[in-house]
Every structure is written in structure tokens, then in C-alpha cells.
Image (cartoon, rainbow, N blue to C red; front, side):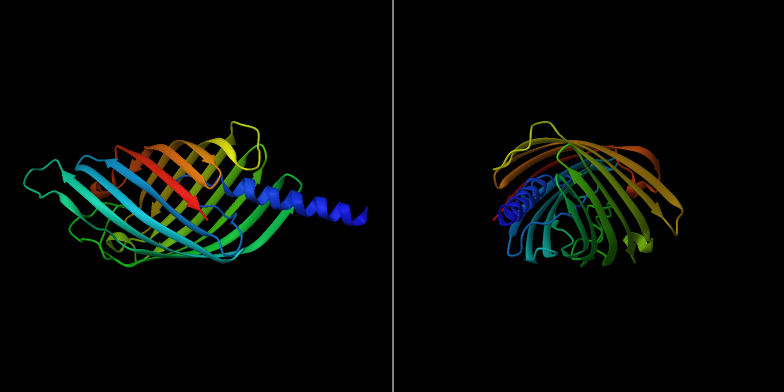
Length: 260
């Protein structure tokens, strides 16, 4: 009976990890990782409308987990830009390539719930066009982002938090960024995964040198089936007290993920 008890507990934790792994935030990050050796290919295209024009960022993203508590990744974006001012050329070019590293340093699992903490570094290489200055779309400048991600997930809901600082960021203005996300499953958890999730996500940014501030809200829906995940989210500003190049009217995110 003792061995059966431990076998049942192990199976429950394995199933729990797989269920949670298919429900990451759409725009934010997650502390819960897949098993070591897992590879993930994904994209999350953003189409943004601003007072200056329309901009689309299409990233090709590859993540690899050397172990169950570490992740490395590379993001290669392509950016399409169309200005309302006909005197400014429109076009498409390579964006700012990014290198990602994450390490999960705390994990506490219980039956049907889990809490985890992750440290992350995101290095932007500044490979994009410096003349296309659109915040979080393309800057052509190098930036180091250091952050911590905390997340709690249960079979009924999930909460994710991220706090980080962009060092030597866009326009030489350091950005203190906080993200908060709530996930609500609409279907009963099953394995293999067949799930629909609603996401309510907030992003708050303080630009320390220029003393600017903005708060964004995104409403999203996610469908996960087996190894594939499909995502759609619409983001709009709640508060904007920022320079023109940071202002936005609305963004639409469309993405997919494949884990293998």
C-alpha cells in the first residue's frame, strides 16, 4: 500500500505539471516550466495601431529546456511598418533579436495547486532599424532586462506576476515594468490537454528618467489541444502619460505554440 500511495502521488504531480504547462499567460511570462529536454516553437504576432501609423511585429521564437528548472531561448522578429505620413517610407525589416534565459529557483507543489518563482534575463541585441522608434516593437538599441516571475496555479485559476527593470533601454530611459495576469479555465481539466482559458492581463510601466507612466489592459482567450496552443488577445491603454513614440491606440496579438 505504501508503494501505491507514492505511485499515485507521483502520477498526480506529473499530470498536474502537464495540465499547467499548457496554460501560460498570453502576453506575460510564466514560472511553470515543462520537463527537461523539451523544445518549444512559437510566435506571438502583435499588430499595433498608433497615432503615427500601423506596426506589426512577427517573432519567430525557439525555447529549449536543458532541465526542468532552466530555459534558454532566442527570439527573431520581423517588423512591418506603415506610417500615416506619406513622406516617411513604409516597409519591412529584421527587428531586434533577443536572447532569453530563465531559472526556476523555488517550487512548492501540492495536490491540485503549485507556486513557483523564476529569475529571468532578456538581452535585446539592437539589430533593428534605429529610425523606426516604436516602444516594444523596434528600437535598434541594446537593452538588458532583468526580472522575477512569480506564479500560482490551481485547477480552478492561475495568477502570474512579473517585476523587472530594463537597463539602458529605449531612448536611454530605464523602464520599471510590472505585469499581472489572471487565468480562468472554462473547461474541466483533462489529460491529454483539451482546454479553453480566458486571460485578464495588465502591464504597468514607469520610465524613471523621463518620469512617464502607462498602464495597459489585455483581454485574451487561449485554446490548448495536446501539444498545440492557439491564442488571441486585444490590448488597450488605460492610462498614458508618455512621449509620442510610446503612445498606442490598440494592439491585437495572435499566436501559437508547439511543444515537443
